[in-house]
Length: 434
View (cartoon, rainbow, N blue to C red):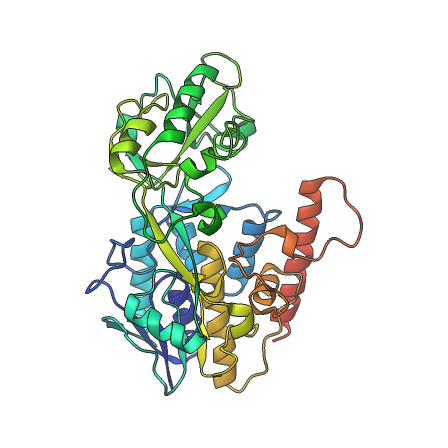
């Protein structure tokens, strides 16, 4: 029996890896390099588009908890991310090219995985298939999925610009971590009140690139990738309390907290490139150069990539999928990745692990893997398959979808850590009983 996995993104690679490690033959289909989506440029697998960050590492955070669960489940993505990580304070960020290259190398080296390059235009009706084509599924296959699933939903997300380190004016910017936690991995560009107000007005009135069928962006933009210019239109202080918040930082030149701060996060291991944290955007390229050059320290910044926005697609999973990511009306078809409505890189990868493991158990005649509801994998699996969810929207890992701690804990960090440790313990118990 050979399982088809369509798409070699994060979810597809994890699904193929999970199946192959159970001894199941996998045929992994990837349309690159013959064809690229509007947002992809790297011929390697598991390409990261919007950001190079896989979020926080600490166990007492939703992202840290999820990554630890994925590690317990044998995640390829987490393993490769740790091996290609770049300094990012308390976050796990990677050198994108090195990360994708390592994932590709491991997939190609696995004796149970055969890679087939070329576009898949229809879902096979024989055998088992995991559809992990991502939110930028090619138009032809997207129509097939819509026909199979009875329509789809869509939203827009965006990527942030990248600048060279050499072009940042370090006479104005400074290295620091918030509250001096961890190493000084972020470059901080501090605003005075007057500088911020001038920048804000320019950002608020800057011209965006045209997007067809994008009449009311606030209704269709993914909150996790909200364009900075749309966020700015919500009010003068919205971004100052969001991605430009200055809390926990002091400008070493003044000894005071800045009025606002733009942070730059290392993009590659060598530290030659940095991305503007929280600056996903759909501004025209010329406007990005004009407005973002008003950020203190970036007056002469060299932009190696401008921000872009693109349409993402996801299916109405609560009506279509069960908790194993299997299509309810066709038990031989599974979905994985952001197309299922899980939000974010690690969530997408997680769904690939689970789809692969659940399918492997069926093929090997093993009972279903029942995930605890209080672990993050179990909670997200439940969310995407919960038929009571009426207005289904993409969901990333968060502590709010987990059952609360049994006892009331006032301190939020301790409360989250307690909830995370409980879920991890229960997941370990399930896995050890296998």
